[in-house]
Image (cartoon, rainbow, N blue to C red):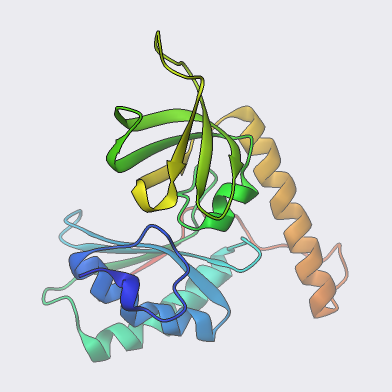
Length: 212
């Protein structure tokens, strides 16, 4: 089972199994309060830990946002009760070295270094590391970080072949991410009618946690 049945899920990389069941539960809740799902992952750390990674449409996610998401999804999870055992809920932002799960993510971070795994062989490989050269409606062009002898310097990967993709932390990425975040926060303040020098929320990479 995958999360493909979730109406309005524009992610190209989705969960399977129990993670997909949880995604189907929390996505409508997130959309209802102005957030979008990035990833759901249930792991065996500290007993059981349910990580819900989310963000606003503009890509921002403050500590206060994490708390709001946690308060909203907890009742829905309690009602549907997809996890039989006690678990620890962790809501977080995607972070700077974030997973790329939507076509728009690849367009947003064009020019930056990523690591990618595919579900099938693409150009005789399943693992790639390189910069996003360009993206379109069907796939992404990767400029290989270190092309082996005889390999083309670029490789085109169709979206439906991507199993996992994540930004690699670099100085350029940090600068660009901070710049994008500052612009998004200023635009959000303007929409809310707040002065631009109003205090901003703290960094949300560590997210918020609670036990269930």
